[in-house]
Figure 1 (cartoon, rainbow, N blue to C red):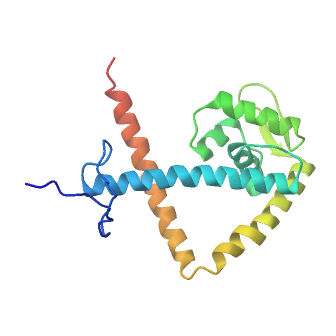
Figure 2 (cartoon, one colour):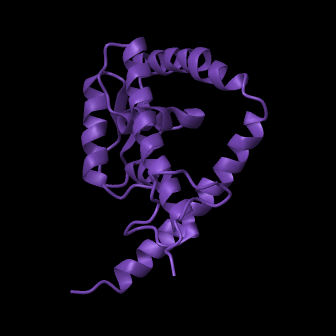
Figure 3 (spheres, rainbow, N blue to C red):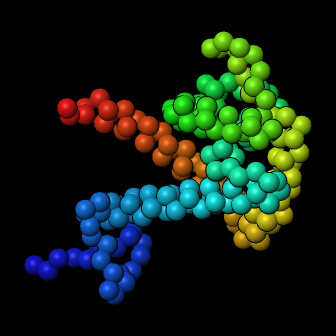
Amino acid sequence: MAEKTLQPQNDTPVPGLDWHWHLAASAVEVDMTELEFALMRTFEGFGRWQSECLASVSDIAATGPENALLHIIRMNERPKTIKDLARLTNRDDVPNIQYSLRKLIGAGLVLRKGAGRSGVTYEVTETGRRVTEDYGALRRRLLIQAIAGVPGFADRLAEATRTLNLLSGIYEEISRVAATHRRG
């Protein structure tokens, strides 16, 4: 019996392409693997976009995650604790968050207030407010304008958000299962 060449669901076989490999032995595995690779590429592209957009409106060199922290600190115009930042970004690498916060403070974008373990909060400075305003304006001019002309994109964004939130929960649950049953 000849081995069937796998391809993503709802797609026709492409001559010369072999979709079968160690992460993808069935059609659903091919689709999931393709989605995971798309997520990785999107994450990296998003990080580059954030860094470039920030660099375009300021002389600050920051990574995508540092830029994200800046905007999350400003979100709802309320100070945030490290616990808030970790929860809102779905991160548990508190030392890396602290390092990023020191960089943002050093750049004059964020202010640390309070003392003690639970009394410390972070908020944007006036410079941080100006930079995030300029970032938002450039984002609207470039990103939002680029997607505005794509027919039906708002609905696609809403569906993608629901799907990614669902996947986030699934990944969280299966990571707990994997940690619970880890060997050694």
